[in-house]
Amino acid sequence: MAIKTSLTILFENPFLFGEQAHETAYYYWYNRLRKLKRAKNPDADKISVVSEAFEVFRKEAVKRKAMVKNKKMEPKEFKDWLFKQQNEVDRLMGE
Image (cartoon, rainbow, N blue to C red; front, top):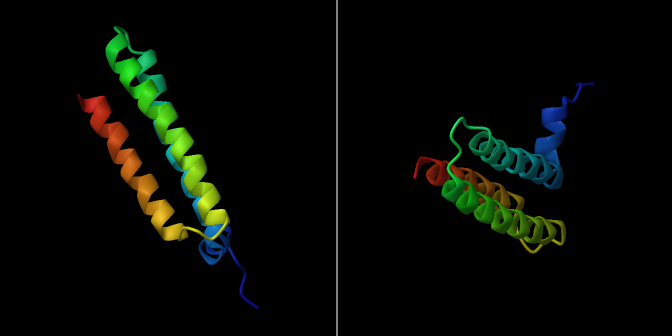
């Protein structure tokens, strides 16, 4: 009998894998915004732009997560979207 690791269980259950990906993406955004706010010379304009984008991300992620749960979206499509959103916050941080 093979022992299942938590990673194996996540890959076998697409919804759980989507949950983990969602949490990871959320904290990725959260930590980038926190880093901006804690800088020695915080840029208020950049903080505002990233904060607004984070709010949009959060709302859209909740909608898409519900779509996965209701089988209206494939978990892989959701995960791919989340990874693209991480690129978006990186782009905003670099501007």
